[in-house]
Length: 98
Image 1 (tube, rainbow, N blue to C red):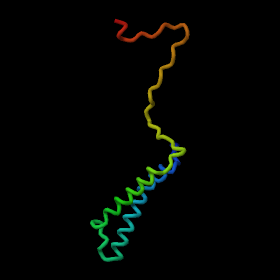
Image 2 (image 1 turned 90 degrees about the vertical axis):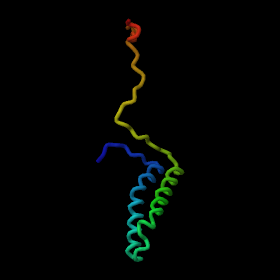
Image 3 (image 1 turned 45 degrees about the vertical axis):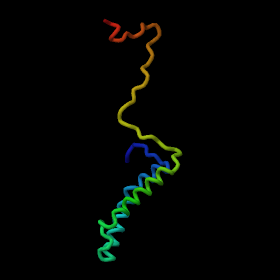
Image 4 (image 1 turned 135 degrees about the vertical axis):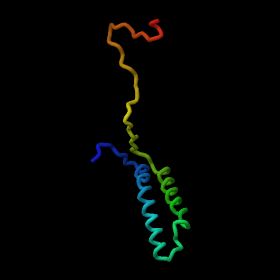
């Protein structure tokens, strides 16, 4: 199991279905090709795959993002440096040392 937290919002769920939907669409096109003797060739029906991808992208764009979790990257974002301890002299920048 992965320790990574997955977003469960509707938009991300729909986006995750794009790959399986394309595979199912290709399978249905191959099945129709076998059943109907060559008319449903991939050369004739490739726009169907684009339509399926487009519909899923539109559904993902219009779906609510309530509870969305941003993906965490492996690199840490630099934040504000900690303040110096009380009574310590202020830090000197390299340009001021000369």
